[in-house]
Length: 129
Image (cartoon, rainbow, N blue to C red):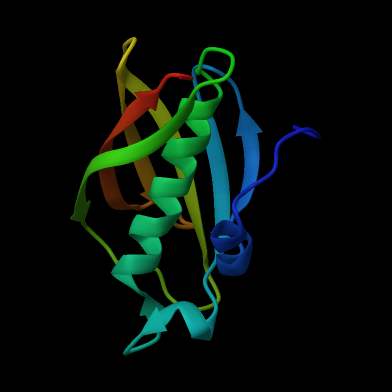
């Protein structure tokens, strides 16, 4: 992962990518007060941003040379809160890896292993011109 560079927004949020392969990407996000809603739980937008970044990393790991990507659809189901002081964990796996689109599923859990959110996103593959 030494050649991997995240976008500035992911660094701003504090997203840490912990594993990258063509089949699976994982990451962590420490739940800090500045990412929280009331009462002191991780904001849904932060969860969605976390999953979007991890899904983009998974797509990039599968792109042909010179191609790039952008998210064209994302759906999130929320199941449980992640409190300040805990860590959000993401595991992203492919549902479809095509020539023009890729679809990823990202499970967001907390330290006790409880499923907190499930995100399904579609990434458009932008081929070089």
